[in-house]
Length: 316
Length: 316
Image (spheres, each protein chain N blue to C red):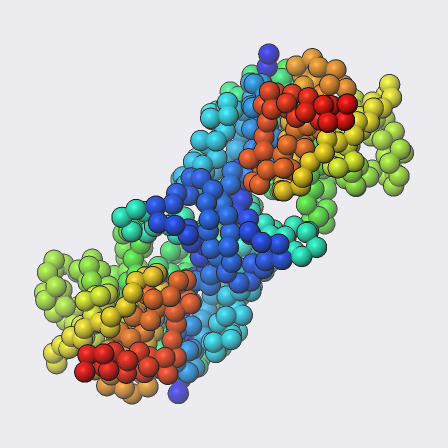
C-alpha cells in the first residue's frame, strides 16, 4: 500500500481565549497548537493507520519541533520536513469576533513555510506515494506552486491519484498567479473537496448542479462537497449521495474540513465504499469541531466507530 | 529642544503565563504586548514629555497598529514608522524556565523589522534630531546597520549626540558582521549603557575598571553600567558615581534596562545633574520590573517622583 503524501505549510496556531477579544490589546491566549491545513490533513491520515508523509519546512525552534513531534507520534513520515536553520516556523493567530467569525494574523509567506521545496528527502518520499493531496492554502508562492506541479507529475507518472481541497483564503483570489494555480489544481485532480461556497468559486457556472457537471466534464472523477452541519454530498458521473452530519457541539471549527478530507481520501484508498467513506468523513469532521485546537481533534478508526455507534444508538 | 530619535525593531511580545511552561505544548499565554527594545526606549522618552520619534517598520496588521497606537498615545512621533504592505509585524514569544531564565522564539529578521530603512519620513525626522539612540539588538542585518551608520552621520553633522545600549543577544556575538557593528557603535557613541557583564564583552580588558578606562580612552564621554537590583554606576573622565536601586518586586524584567536608559538620556538632555538623572533612571527601572509586559511599565516624571518620594519616606 503506497503512501498518502501532501506538501505545504506547517504552522503553530495561537488562539484568543475569549469571543470578541481584540489583537490590538493584550489578552488571554492559548497555544502554540500544531497546525497548518496540510499538516492537520496528514496527521488525520496517520491516525487512521495509513502510511503517509508530508513535504514541508519548519524553523529550528520550539514551534517546529512541536509539530514534528506530534506528526511523528501519530505515525506520519517526517523525513521530508526540512528544518531551516535561518527561518522561523510559520504561525497563525486566530480570534473570534462577537459574531463568531474568525480573524487571523498570519506569518506564512516569509516564514519557513515559504521555503518548502522538493529536496532529496521529498523526492524519496514521493517515490513511495500513491496519492498526493493539495491544499489551496499552500499555493502561496511561485516556487511552491512549481514544487506542487512537479510532485503531481511524479505521482501521476507512477499511476497515483490526486486530491485537491481549495481551502481558499479570500485574498488569494485577488492574485492572478494564485488563481491560475487554483484552476490548474482543479483541472489536475481526481477528487475535488470544496467546502460549500467554494464549489462555484473556480467554475464558469454560478449554480451548484451546473458547477458539478462542469467540473466532472473537466475529467475530475469525483467531487465531495463539505457542508459542515448540513453533512456532505458525493458526486461522480454515476450519480450522487448525500449523508447528514453527526450532531456535534462546535468548540473550534478550524481543521474540521481537513480531517473530513483526510478521512474520506484514506477510506477510499483503503477500498471502503463511497457511503462508508462519507460516513467516516462526517464522523471525523464532527469529532474535530468538538475539540479546541486545529490538530487536537484528529481521530482513530476506533474513535470514529464509537462516535458512529453512539449516534446510531441515540437515533435508534 | 531637538528630538530624541531611535531606529530599530517594533515587536509584539507574547508571554507564557506560568513559570516552567514549554513552547512545545499548548498552554496559557498572554499578549500581544507592544514591544521591541527601541520601541520601549522611545515610549519611555515620550512619557517623560520629551519630543521624540522612532524609525521603524511594521506590517499592516493588528500587531503593527497596536504598537503605533500605543506610541502615538504616549506622545512619540510615529511619522517614520513605515507600514509594509507585504510583511508581518515582528514578534517575540517569551517563557520562563523553572530557574527563572528567559527563553525566546523570535520572528524579527524576516519580519517587517528587517525592512527598517531611511525613508523620506525617516530623513525628515532625523533633521529634527539632537540625540540618536541605538540598541545593539537592532544591528541584526547589513541594511539596518548601514541605515544606523547613515543616521549617526546625519545627527553628528547636526551637532547631536549618540547613545548606545549593547542589549546583546548571545547569538549576535557569533556573527562577525554584527560583532563589527557592535564595535563600531561603541567607538561612535557619546554615552555607553551596558548591563553589568556587557561592559567587558567588546573590550580588550577583562576586568571592569580596565574596561572603563579603555572605553573612555576611545573617546566615549560617559558610561552608565546598569546593575539591576545592585543599582547603577556612572563613569566619566572626572570620576564616578554609584547609586543603589530602589526596592522593587520583580514581576517582569523585560524592558527595564530600556526604560532606565531612556530616562537617563532624557534627564541629561533636559539639563538634569548626573545624580538626579541616575536616580530617575533607577526609579524608571524599578517601576518597569514591577509591571507585567515589556512596555507596560514606562513612567511619567510624576510617577517617578512618587516612587522616589515613597522610598525616601520608607527609609527616613
